[in-house]
Structure formats: C-alpha cells, structure tokens
Amino acid sequence: MSQGDNKEKNNKILDLSEEQVRMYLEDNRDFFERHSDLISIFEFSPTRGRAVSLFEKQVSVLRERNVELRQRISTLTNNAKENDEIFKNSRDLVLALLDAKSLDELNVGFSKAMKNTFKVEFSCIIIFGSETTKRPIRIEKLDVASAKIGAIIKGRKPVCGALRDTELEFLFPESKGIGSAAVMPITNGEPIGVVAMGNSNAVHYNSDMGTLFLTYISEVLARSISNLSHQ
Image (cartoon, rainbow, N blue to C red; front, side, top):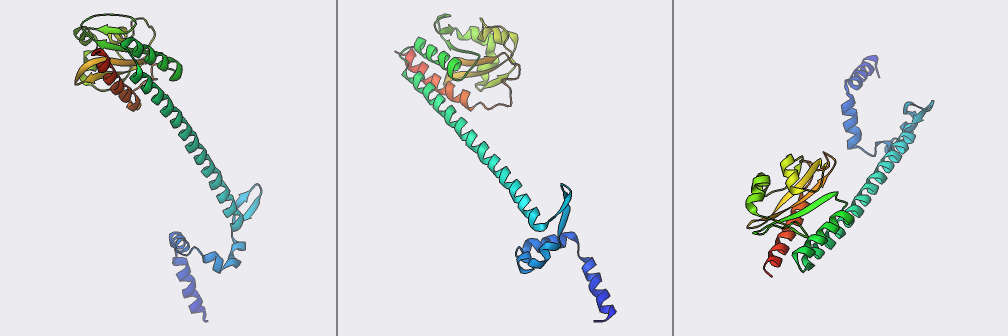
C-alpha cells in the first residue's frame, strides 16, 4: 500500500466522530465478542491509583446498577407495605362508620380512629340540623355554619392548608394552636355537614397534598348520616 493510500485511510478514520463510533457500537453489541483482543487495550481513568480495563469497568457499572436496582425494589416493597396498612385502616374505619347504630356512635367511632389509628391531632364531624348540640355529636344550624365557613360549604370540595381564625374557631372551638387543617363538606345532594382534621404544624395540611382519603371518608359519612338521621 502506498503512502498516499495510508494517508487517505488515516483521514477517513479522523473523519469519524465520537458519536458515530458510539452509534456503531450500540448497533453492534457483539463487537467486542468478535474482537475480544481489543478488550485488554482499553483503559479508563485511574481508580484508587490504578488503571482499570474495559472488563473491570463493565463489572463496576453492573455492580452499581445492581445496588440501584436493589434500592428501587426495597422502596417499592416498603411502599406496598404502607399501602396495605393504609387500606386495612381505611377498611376498618369504613366498616365502623357503616355499623354505627346512632349518630353518637358514628362520632365516637370516627374520633377514636382518627386519634388512635391515623394519628390525627384534631378532628371533628359537624352535622347541620335544626337543633344545636355540642356533645356527644355536634349539630349546628346551616345558616350559622354558612356565616363562619360559607366558602368551604359552597365549594363542595376539599380545602387543605391554613384557614382563617374564624373558620378554625368554628371548626375546633375547644382547640388552640392549630396551624393547618383539611376540611371537606359532607353532601347528599345538599350540604349536611363537614368533616375536618387539624394539626399544629402550619404546613402539615397543604394545597399540594392528596385528598382522595378525605373525599372517600366524607362520602361514607354522607351515607351513614343520612341513614341514621331517618331512623
């Protein structure tokens, strides 16, 4: 081969970009199987004071990926266990609410579950009615409630975050220092009450949190309250 031919060949090699080489290797995964003699000549940046071969580098990468995969599996397993626990607790609460024989029993079952099972710091159920009671279950006239939490009642959707002082005082009249709350109107065609949860932490309940659980519980309460009110 002449010097001119060698020069032309070298120019063609130099024209290859790193991206082209990368694409070629990706399209030819068996390249190093067909050219195993090249594996030993590849070296990477020193690790702990020595150069590593291509094979050692591959083993290292695979080990790192294995560790990452184990961590992901562990996270998924833990999430699954947490979801199972939430489902069990939610099921037990729903059954207790549906089995209640009176509005007072409904209130007691809800309050115990919130405090003991779900570790909710403050909670309450308020039912709208013609009479006004404070215990064992609280009943307030709708016009009185509307004057204090009218925006929440009209919205008919969960409200989470910091509430006005007047709203907190109405929802939790005997509790002080509540920083945030989650409130959901209880409706059965028309508003029949509200369910609320509170926490002393100002950001515990916030607008970015999920509200599926609160919505679900309010729907169960709506059915139970409607059935018990007509007994």
